[in-house]
Image (cartoon, rainbow, N blue to C red; front, side, top):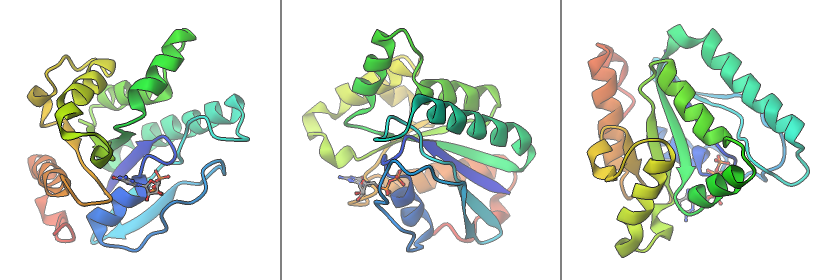
Length: 198
Ligand code: GDP
C-alpha cells in the first residue's frame, strides 16, 4: 500500500517525507534534473515521491508534459495500491505561478493534477508548505487564495480535512498533517498499517 506525493520541484516534498518518516532523505537537490519516482519504506507501507514538475532551468515544456504524463499514468496504473495522495504546494509562490499560467490561457499542472487526484477519488490532502515564510497576519488571506485557485471556495478553514498549512522546516503544522493522514487511513480501515507514523 502506498502514500503518494506530487508537487512542483523545490516545494519541499523531500522535507515533508523526512518529517513524516524521520528518514534522512536528501533535501535541496538541484531542481532542473529530471527525477525518477522515488520510494521510501514506511513500515508495511511505501511513500512514493513523484518526479517534480514546473519551469526549471534547462527543462523544456515538452519534458514537463512528459513528467505530467508519467505521473498520470502511474496514478491510473497503480490506483488500487494507493491509499492516500498528497499534493504539496509552496505557500509563497503558488498563487503567482497559477496566475502566470492563467494569463497565458493555460491550466497549471498543479491545478490539473489536484482535480485529477479528486477524480480518482483519492481524497487528496493539499499540503501548503513553507508557511513559515508568510507573515501570520497574511496567512488566512494567502490560504483562501490558494484554495480558490483549486476550486475550493474560501474561507479555507472549512477545508481543514483537505488543506493543511505546514512548515517542513520548522515543524509547525506537522502534527496536524500526521493527524489528518491517520484519520484518512483509519477511515479506509487500514489503521493497522500506520505503526510507523509517530
Ligand atoms: P523537493 O524538491 O520538493 O523535494 O524539495 P526539498 O524538500 O528538497 O526542499 C527544497 C528547498 O526548500 C530546500 O532548500 C529546503 O530546505 C526548503 N524547504 C523545504 N520545506 C521548507 C519550509 O517549510 N520552509 C522553508 N522556509 N523552506 C523549506
